[in-house]
Image 1 (cartoon, one colour):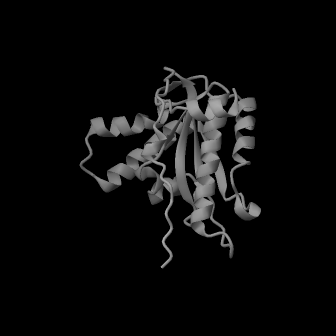
Image 2: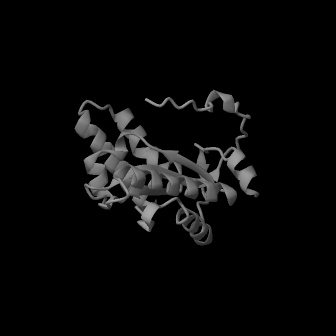
Image 3: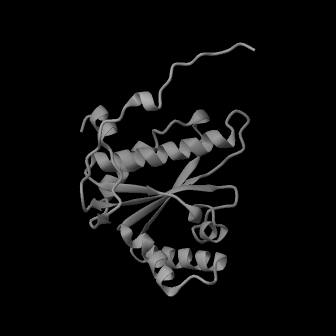
Length: 188
């Protein structure tokens, strides 16, 4: 797949099934992540790969975190939460691993981790895999972070669900005038 074609046609795949990425496909994805913009070569991210039994445990952690916030959560709601991580055969949790640096503020490091996540997603799509970058409150929950071994100074930037897309979606062309404007700087 050519680079521009990849960039123009990548889509999220919310419905994923087995097989997940092979070891070889994962290595290609990891190399892509390593090329993310990275001021001062800090590599301010790390990846936590979950599959099989670990996905079930993550579901249990999600339920416990939600029940702690809302003890009135119904059994039906708990079951729905429990099964969320099972929507894909693999999840890569992308973590911004922040380092104190005089020239690279925290925000740049978080953006770099986000770029690494997107590179993983692009490399997955280029290899015929489906991917869905999921976020939400669980990224910020201290108990979820602790269960994954994410330090207090670190931040989860997303859960990248990976597998084979059940349905291949096509994209519509986007009108770039909706989000691009010509600058007009005012000197104050």
